[in-house]
Image (tube, helix red, strand yellow):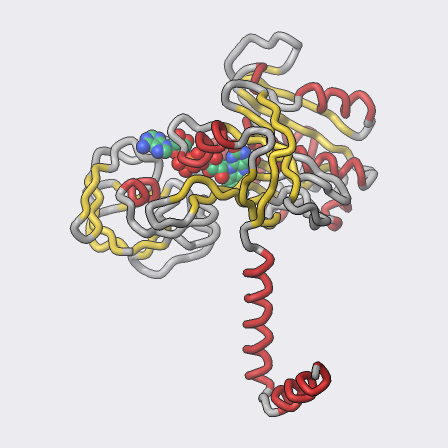
Length: 363
Ligand SMILES: Cc1cc2nc3c(=O)[nH]c(=O)nc-3n(C[C@H](O)[C@H](O)[C@H](O)COP(=O)(O)OP(=O)(O)OC[C@H]3O[C@@H](n4cnc5c(N)ncnc54)[C@H](O)[C@@H]3O)c2cc1C
């Protein structure tokens, strides 16, 4: 029976032209990727609360299967509470630990004061509960060819330490022969995630230097205080290092511009933003069809549209995936994040934009 089916398929394919085969091939690849990226159940095997707002989750698959390896820097997508559309709100969380053959995935999450998903996870994701996740993906990664550089400089701000911690673990596993610098910035000493672990690594790996920075409190354990500058990063890395940043947008913009000013080529500067930061929307009305909402206080136009319960799609929420495109019909918008790809006229990404006047939007 199978042989007959294969012969029939073969005969069918033989009739297809090259172009049709290409289209079919693309379609099958897309279906496969879609299937691979479906939501799957994971059990919270362990949970560690570092502070009232920062917590770590260790996730294992249900039922148990061999987890695919991932490239350090990649993220998981977690499903949170249901939206009015009946679909879950989804958010990305970088994998905070790297192993060659992972049995479990580790995430570290910051509960945001008004955040929809992070607050839900904080109360719901207790040890033993089940979460739905999509497998790892992402382009902010350290790879084999980066190992040619004489130095690798990692910068993690706040909970942005997660992807660079996985990168550090991979570099050590790969016996990287260059110099690795980790600059970790946090507000206070209690926010220096994985501090003891980094100190241990620095004490046992001669190629690694750990430099924590605190911006708020008096240093208690001799850490540096104040703002991390491009000059400090450049003094270790120079022009030939690869630099990886995961920090607040303002800090990243400043450091990237400073390093470019020192002559570091853009191809050596890699960064991930977790979300738009800044003062958020002003007191302007946003109108879509018959619905109007005052935007004051919402971080971006995307948050305003979500608060209006409109069916706006989103994935990365940081200007990369392009799923939250909207049309500006009237008024003015301003980007607080630069979208990664150019957009057609009057088209904006809601996750990147804030209103500068009353605006009328169409989805
Ligand atoms: C690639 C990638 C990796 C990431 N990795 C991590 C990670 O490892 N750890 C981590 O903690 N996060 C990570 N994030 C961020 C994460 O995906 C979420 O964006 C974050 O948890 C906030 O989601 P939320 O649903 O809780 O907040 P949202 O509801 O999306 O709100 C976002 C922000 O807006 C504020 N806000 C919302 N509504 C209002 C309002 N009405 N008024 C004022 N402020 C408001 C919230 O306080 C919050 O700060 C990552 C993001 C990306 C893109």
